[in-house]
Length: 468
Image (cartoon, rainbow, N blue to C red; front, side, top):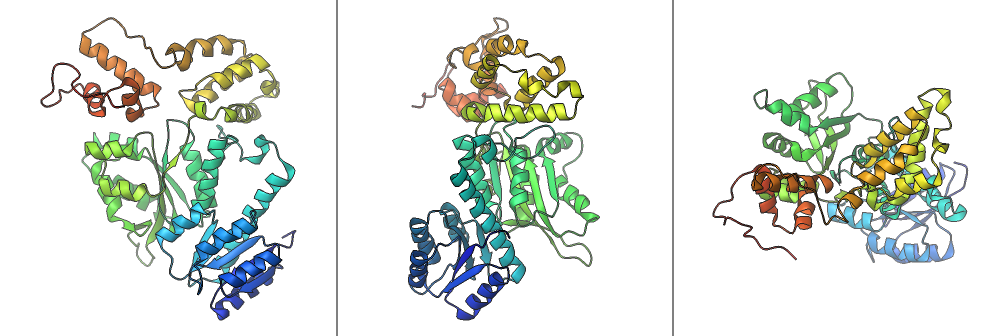
């Protein structure tokens, strides 16, 4: 390490505290040891501390209380919880306080040092951003692009998402990513895996809609379990991450299979011969409101409750317009890097007016639609088409601020009604709950119209009250 960070250990067991202090000092760092909260506060008032490592159970106050006070004294401090009686509630409370790691006893030297290095890196990055006032384009991770799996997020909403991801990545419980199509959920799942304690283990990705399609051809069987066994059969790995994309499309019997594989916050695969069971961290994504799927009976209540512990809502591009320009620049650079040298200056084709158009456009297809438009710019070597194309197709403009829609005058009233509802659902990114609110109708009415099924005991017209 290039700098000499200072670490404060607060541990009421003197033997454990001295062992941890020795481990840290062997890394070339300065370390103080306090036996209770009072001694810890005194040390914080006397010395600049970079990382606080505290036991959760202390004789006078608990570790979470100490962390709250530590942040008040030294706002830049980074914290790690070290405990032998941890609980999920305390882990969540720690996350909300900005704790970057959670180490359970008994632990070994490698675990402590790994957590320490992670905390120091978080601390350095935070200080670097504040000290140098780095432009937003540089502060964040690189952008989602055709050739990269990192992420750009300079807007306040995405900074919040990325901050949450860094805090929860090392904890062993499932993560649910919610958002419209192509907002970067898969990219963020990979980011969580890279920040996790199993970053060097396999990352396995399944699209649940493909499993749903298989069900229509073959008799039901546990495809998730079957594919996981196959993917891990030739590897000497017993840990890893599984990412289930569009988990709302997972057939009910597969959902029950997942529930049967739960063990605390992980999924456990049956042990192979002469091998330990495989433990997998589950990350799931959805474009729909899973609570509505639970109400309809298409998603298992227990699976929803397990996944919904700390859901992460990924905002669409229209809600984080500050990301559009840096994201576009990165995508253009990736596109031209894989093309011929004639396109190396493609990012400079875009003039001020076109940047304004790109930024104002609502991007209903999010990152994929943006990539398609930028690819066309690279191929044609020209961006003159962008202004007219996007202005004419901008949902915000064509919908009259989402208050109007064009319905083809063919077919009967029911078919036109279904067309209108389907179109609004598309413009709401597949979010049926949002579409129902936009149309001012009950969600059950919307589902009935989409499925073209009569509702029991319904009146000929809209019988349900409009929610306010």
